[in-house]
Length: 422
Image (cartoon, rainbow, N blue to C red; front, top):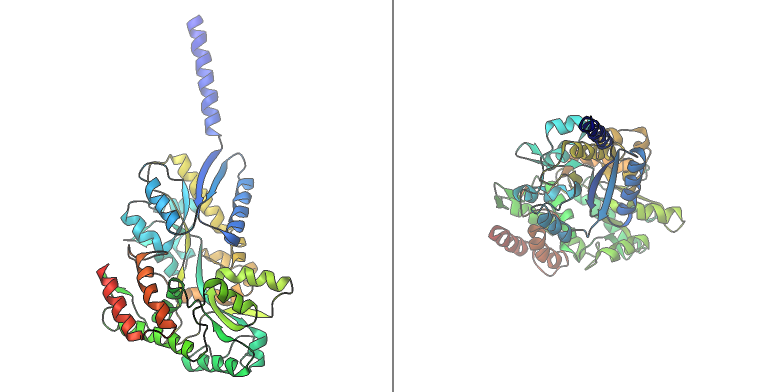
């Protein structure tokens, strides 16, 4: 009888433990690289998620240093089983991550569980996280570059349309005319502020202008084949011409570019959508002029804008079914509640959010969000992506070329040789 009693007690204890396990809160370990306003907003979204899933799922989040340090840590953590359960990732870095076996495929069953589908995303955004027909991340946003502009200065120069947008956005001649009118007005130091001291940043503008010519940086594993070198030269020549004519800022780093625009010394600025909160907050506090942001001007044949995407990825490795379901819920919930993420200036990747009435009431976001139909991402290469070798090589030649110290044709030849040597 004692043995039977002991067995019953043991069985009861086991049942209690199994019941507790079934209803235990699942902790999802999270790594991101989001600083500044992005970090503030994501921390709020994580807090909101945890509140909505109290007792079920809890995100345990850590923010790491952006760029090479983040990706190096991922590369060393995954093989030894010390990776998180979920992490932010740039779409441009996915080809290298897949080549290094760092990511888990997001399967058709995963997409079904998340209630997300290919049709919810812009084609270029979906393709950016796809390698050999398989998806390796869930896009959260796209963050392209845009043209910021000072409505007051454009109006003074007679280059503001009735709808409050800049004139001359549909051609090289028209946009140069707008720049010249601003210079002739004598009211600005530079008509256009650009980050001309940082070739890594200027890659975004130059690649956009190549895209406007249907140019390709990489074709079948080779760089700048055929007339693509000429298309790169065309892009560099336009920007160098603006600098030489005093229409664009020279040797300007990122903070100085923002300062030129916000102080009114530059009437326009090419920068990422992530600076929208800066402008919004300054204007709200009465410290900024009337401003707007639009898609880049069409300098060549058609609209095209460089973009990257913040996405969610699952590291490769073993994971229980319960843990994976929790991770999928995290990615699904944040995607579907990404309207708040749009206040950082980013364009939510999940289509139903950008199609909502709430998003369409957000300005200037709603004005520039149609550019998602014209986006181009980095070439799919293990050498591409944020802080990748392609950026580094091209940056070396972009800075002197854009600042009038190197001939565009010479720069292209040097770039072609170094890229193909990679």
